[in-house]
Amino acid sequence: MDDPYPLLRRKLTSRQHRFGAIRTLTRYLCFESWEALMRFVLQSFEPALPQPETG
Image 1: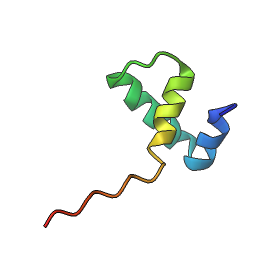
Image 2: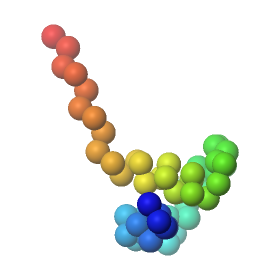
Image 3: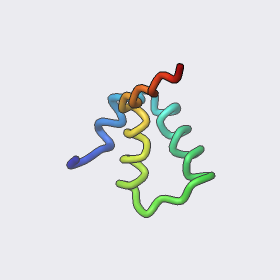
Image 4: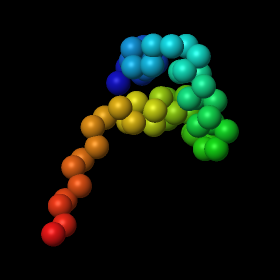
């Protein structure tokens, strides 16, 4: 991924919401870099794997 920030801007269109999410994450988690933070946030938009059904 060349520059993840434009993709994040398309996912979180509100600047207030985007930076609120970043502020909350960085309050509780430490990231190695800006790119690592962007990857972490963008992963939340990927569909989750379906959970196996238990009978």
